[in-house]
Length: 104
Image (tube, rainbow, N blue to C red):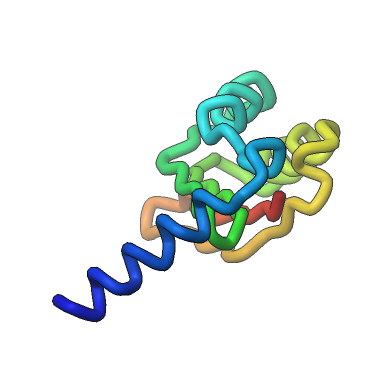
């Protein structure tokens, strides 16, 4: 528990020393994601890691064409220019599940 407290204290000190212009608003990222989602794709989970400045996007779709369209749609926004595919799997019912990551 002491280690957790020290880590928490260190994170707070680091945060306080961060220039506000460098902070990223996770809600604005989510709003951009919403506006870029193609109709045939379902986003199932969204994670934002402030320390590593990375967004992880989980989703599902029926075929690879829709996944490709989704990637192109995200990359059309300069905020997602570094978007990369982390994993792609097909579940037992044939649905394509994917994880995308983007650094900011």
